[in-house]
Length: 265
Image (cartoon, rainbow, N blue to C red; front, side):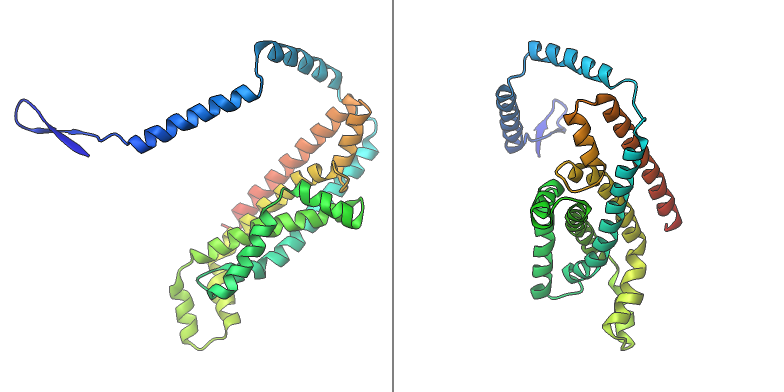
């Protein structure tokens, strides 16, 4: 900050320019322009793309729900994958989250736990699903295992951070009574983080429901496989029916999540 003298003798505040920030913004803008040149964006391609997009949407209308049995089967399998992956992921995330909390555990315990979290978060669920498809074959098992890995990476990280933000007064009071570590966790930690933990679970269930569609595209079960097969057959009216069904299920899941958050506030 700097000051400048005025005609009446008083000093006027003149903000000091942050040259480092200005240079950083200029470099960022230059890099964005460079990246745009690599995409070969031009008006002709945009015009052709809009025309083809309109033609594609026209072929998707009206939606075809005649093969509703195949549609329901795929959606039920996606729901099963999401529920199983979330349940198993939550069960495995609890101990990992506790071990990764730096206010409860020593450093030699938290570092390996956080390494597990980083490993689970390093790859997209589709990449993990491809690995499990190669390991256990096509089907819902590969998709469930892939989403379990994703659930551990997400829930464990947020759970550990929630534990690190709790008040230690309650924990110290319980420890002063000579209570064992399990009682400290049960009566000192869980009551302070349970509301947020329920929110994490509901969000992860919603995320797994969406990701179950993606992992199905690589052969890991669910409605994604049905969607990919419809695209390959150029069966775009059935594709439209599948997309509408996915949106409807996600909207219902969002409503359930909102109810769960209200119940545990």
